Length: 296
Image (cartoon, rainbow, N blue to C red):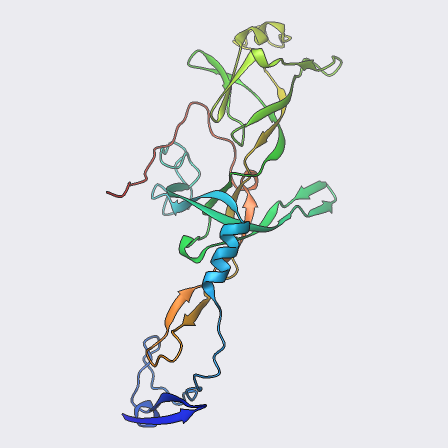
């Protein structure tokens, strides 16, 4: 291989003569001979991205967040592709989450687009989120925004389980705003005061005295059906459904240096969707195993 040195703008630059090396050089992907190669461009004037400036922007303007790494659960059946409903690692969802990372992210826009279809309204609940390159987010990773709050309303159907009248909402409530008990189609909804329930992490435990005021529809039924409407605040929780800017690294090198420049990962932009569009609420009485292996 020949080496030529020339001066451009008063700066010495090394330029490799690649012509003698092109014919026999192999591609590491296709293992085919390379017929052509783009000539090496002059080093100066230098144009590049300053990755540290993007990182500082995320750090100064972003939100505190947790990122949980998603992994496919090995309980998934080979033939059907369905997860085992009894699996304690994923709770039948087919995914489990490990290696929680505390970081900062930028939510560039919270998109709550709505489509009006013949049978009703579909809220897609997506968000465009940018993370630091070092965070290395991937498909289905869970992102929890710790400095924001959202409000969610759902219908809960508590049941007796191991002596407790409880239910698991989709999200972990921060504060219950309103809660009403359904007594019948011709009866006004009954407000449930805060002293009649306790929020325990991601479940709500009710006072069993509420069962006494419910109408009995079937005398053979052990407990009457209980239907509760609730509105509560929670941390926004998203799952990554697409990575828009994953394969983007830029070259950084010191000025007046002839050494090979270093490839650095640019911030990663992902499309994420609200958790309640991805998974159903947790099943009764089931707690998943924690599979994170802590570093020594």
